[in-house]
View (cartoon, helix red, strand yellow):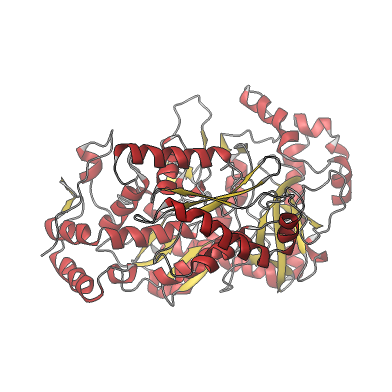
Length: 584
């Protein structure tokens, strides 16, 4: 017999209509949408294989950027009316960071027109702040219509092709890569993350057919894990073939929620409910019986138990995201795993066009891109006068910093991202994201990487804790400076074991990173410290940030995290749970 369902309450502001609205998960991927995605993918592949077409597309981007910026405040200040060539462009505009663009953003916020682009921004996109305070990036209809929307159709074309365009019609996808938001009131310029936005701005923009489906709708004040369970419940009877997320952690969280709430889902399917509430999706006793049998056989439920024809997962698979691969493989063993585009708030850099698991060709038609070689271990921003290369001048195996110019108003903008050339797809370099400036810990030249930290902890713990350890390393400035690893501590394990664990991880770190070892031996770094936190503390801290306005897609877990406030918050969350005598 199934166990009692987990107590569930509707989030504040969620009325009966939001929980029982019509269930609309049928024929989710119509032919017209597939055709558009197929054509966009074919275009990207053609640009890679035809050098002349790629160069022509890049030239068209440059011409469009000039048309957008010439008669603007920025254009007049930099005398861009005199620019005719890419060389002229580089001489007229120094390489910039966000600080140089802040005054122009402030003018936009004050209501000025034609500041950076002829097409005035209709919204400002808030970055995740993963490398500092969140930035506000303008977004225009011209940028979305001509560039951004087409790029999204192209990458989804690859995901559909992996299933087979002839097989995917009428089936479902689970899109975890963005969320819809409520449009701003008339007369207001909205501010939101790129992964949270309202409907398309025009017929040319990206608008998937699942935009109005019940599982894709958001509920005010719904907690993150509760939202994942709601998607599982509403899509339980659908033929889901593809699951797409930006961060692999979200797919892993989805699998964990299914395993943790297997009996809840089985009971809800049998009763036609969602917790204690009626559900938009009707009862499905046959599915409930099948899932119950699977649960009895293995003691858990997997995503492929729920969706037997699930065959493609999509997420970032490079840099620190690559460290999730073992857990992603455990959640979706043997499944085709494709990369999400190398995309951020400021620009789309690559569009995947084939089965390469972690890299994609440069999106030569979605922006203007320049490249500055980066020495091994270098972790500084690109200089204003640095000499840059064009994409056709890049070399396989070399790592570069990327400078982009976009029709959203960012010109010669240092993204702060590092990419390594894997190979060439025809005439276009295939790039793999290898990290951001500032993600390396280096008080004294030790250049401690996220991979160093992750490997040291995992090698030290092995399977001793029996679960996936959740942790992050925080650089702490002091005399001398050093590092503290906050790690979710198993229930029943005394905190007094933290000192011994710190010594073991320290030994492994010194083995992996000789510079770190040298700085420790010369006492320029203090010994590593471990801060035990309650299980679930990281998840709770993320939930508090989400409630404060952060997007779940932008809450990225880092194995080296410079946010000292997060370390304090983890301690506060743990202390609050200890004081209440409850689990987090």
